[in-house]
Length: 595
Image 1: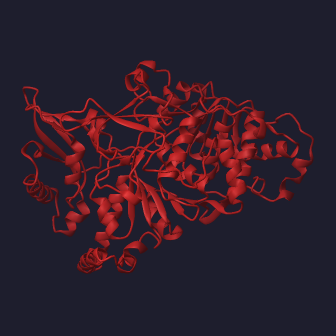
Image 2: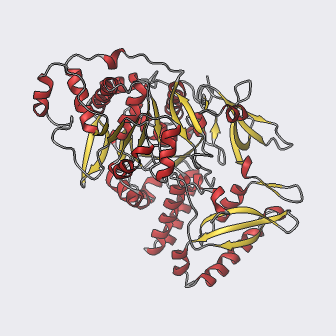
Image 3: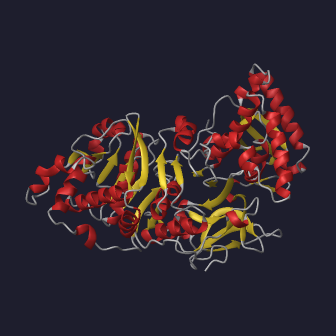
């Protein structure tokens, strides 16, 4: 038992089928999902969601798709989530794909994973129709309902009368031909089968140790690795997520991250299903703040970019409204009263909290390095940031900084059931972070050499992240080992550390620190590639790129005075476009030199 996360009176799941069944029975008509269709907010209860998963799973068996590899791609919808669960429950392998991939890459992944069906949003119908000849292994193309359209009256969410004629018929052979099918046809057919006495859902075997998901890491089909996860991996991560956070069935979350990432699926979608919390699905990146105001979340699962954007928005709003001085005064006053045990944050910062709907208490942040200064800054407003650490290969949870015992700059101790250690530490105790436990993947799909390179003979997974573990077991990340910059004087610099300092400069919106080589092939200093915040620059009177560049250089020069010599920025390259990013808004470092 992990001493940081003692076993509390919390629900524990054993497999996905029991998760769906138990949640439906425990939470009944309570809202599980809220989402917008044709401009209207709709909701789906835990019971209704469970019924749909049961119907879809039953249909998959009837179609001969149980145990098969099935891809899902598209925006977040209830049906996307149903597909993910139903494929796994039916003994199949779910292959979630990034909807922002180029179509050639999508086809490559479908063929590489040997998928026999793909569930997709309507936006992909035309492309799949045109490329069907190159996808000979795909038997079914199932079109998920669009987030823009309501259901047809014959959808299973309709009344019993709508399907009375269907359910009265004897059990026939499955009538749907291979090819393109609407999602509603499958769930409606599943309902027919269930009403005729089909018990497949309740009697199918669950094998926790076998592969149930293939998740492709970023990169082209030739360079991307397919992470193979089992139900055991995912179940362990979901239970750990529940155990190590203070979320409860009273919480309301807004889902803003893409569901093809295990971070969002594990922590933002399936953990709420376990605990009875409500998830409100955001429409798009443009509507995030509107969704916060509409749904008034109590908790959020985010990546650092959203946290920094929100923080800057708070101060921008205060400055534009002439309340920046008042906000600074309130922070000073709050700090003084807190030292005497008097918490006035809810009163003093009600306008700040109103930007999130007024009820936000906690943000779980992971997926990329977070500027550690944001943790105390949000604490000042009465919003607790719980930083987590994970990697897809660990489904993805590795550690969480507990809200009741936070250490600033740390990502917390390893979650319950997971062991951690530092491999080959240097004199300062910094080395590669390694973990071992039920979260660790089965391996990389059809790549035993790559698997052996990261999982040693004793079962330890080598994360590729550098850091150290303190005397209390808290993990501190210093950077990605593969990103480390080795200077010609032998000094090692983790660019993430310098980037955190640069992003504190208000004129800098995005940045990447690299080591440029001289004519002799030596890296003698650091160069910062910077995308300025041009809107803020104009507000300060810097009207053109030259004035903005000069201002940025002055700010960086001031920063350099606070850094050791080998960590100082020696070169600055200003760019006028954003960096290429992943769907979780991490800058693709390997693309920086190609642009």
